[in-house]
Image (tube, rainbow, N blue to C red; front, side):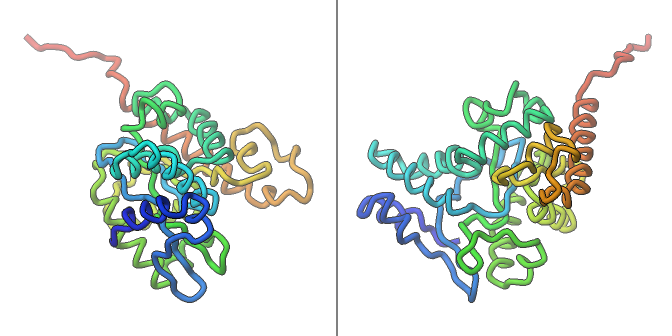
Length: 273
């Protein structure tokens, strides 16, 4: 992987966040697909919870530029800039992070890694978390953020190469007892592919949650704040309740299973004289 962080910081220094947002650094382009750089290199291989999305969006490109400019003004080291982009930018933003925290708390996922609530994952408990994306650079298709199915990703040579050489290589470096949660069906399919390649054991996959950035009622339905009868007749979520219900049940069951396995044996341990 080419190291783009120096060029990125240099452009921020010369043109500011506004300049980088207006002319983001192009990583690769192939026909209708394009990838633009955001700092994504930071990796904590000892993280116990890995949250996997498909790709950063336009909002993350803007947020990354602003955060990087802020950090550079205080003469922050490059390694720290990369870490802070993982902590503050990836899976960040006013819509994404609050919805993500709500969903993680709903299933009490943070308790699996010894944290009381999800907000701690991005604060004092950040060392327990590793955000990842199947396509770590902001990937677009005809100018729109790529949100196609996994089959489309694998059918595009440039996207497939990045997925296999960067995402799967990162998975190989993670601890073998880490838990994985996918954000959206494309990310879930990518993780299932990693299982088929024996890079992740099936029991490490806790399940899937909807993409946190989804506006409207999807997240609220997933969190059981709405029922089907509460959805308007034209709400597209009505066509997604099947997989949303299945994903809810699977994640709930798997979290319960992990917690049960971690509980002490009620029979106790006895010494035989």
